[in-house]
Length: 258
Image (tube, rainbow, N blue to C red):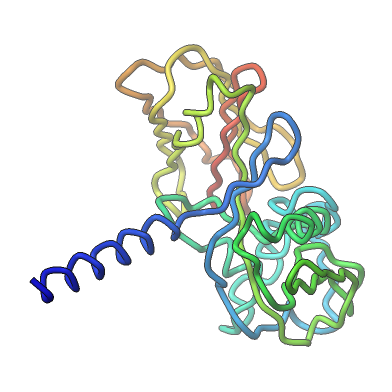
């Protein structure tokens, strides 16, 4: 009987651990949710090369949305000579069935710091994706409800927390949080096969380059079996592209590299 009780306790602890290991949801306005990865993706890492200014795309200068910053950083630094860096870690992260993680922006980190109790009370100094210049980037210190955000030298070693976004219109379509846009192959060649699951109805599918220019736009109809369509990208330049599926205020994105 004692052994049986011990087994039940262990099982309950295991179930609790599994339940707690899921992305922390954090509201970002009326139509957007941030999801915070519950584990630190790196404990001590440089932001990027000291003295290098990110000029790819629109640079790493978006204060409110870390995705375009992350894309610009990775577009310019590539594999960084084999040296890991925060933006690359988040850009290549696959966790909880999602691949659209990114390094948070200045204000996304601030939002996280203001709501520490809702995201597992992280403790430490975390890099953001916002760049001040070739020497400084944004970072946030969080500890037991206190926080301090400021610029710091890129060669300093801090932690990495990756996040992702979901767009919803209201609580009635919160089921959209599980929808998927998958691009095959990755990296892409002369064409991409875009597969969409979990949505039904008429949508607008667009492809944007890193500068924000729309390269492709078409109306699509998604049935209960999903959608699968091939798009010719042989005329596209090398680089990173964003795939956007939109219906009213609902937006779901994916990305691919050519």
